[in-house]
Length: 66
Image (cartoon, rainbow, N blue to C red; front, side):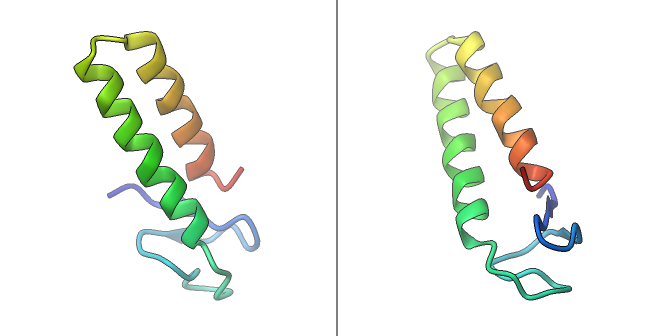
């Protein structure tokens, strides 16, 4: 599983829903990442590679806590 950077303290977190360092609630970010991953997989199944790539890029931004 990919790690998620906390937008508050920038700590890397592999598990949610709370930041391991500052205890910020990261449940929305983890949920968003899960939804984006599911949509990217769905786009790949439909062979819509452009859409899959866009979801992947948003996931990467989400990983950095943006």
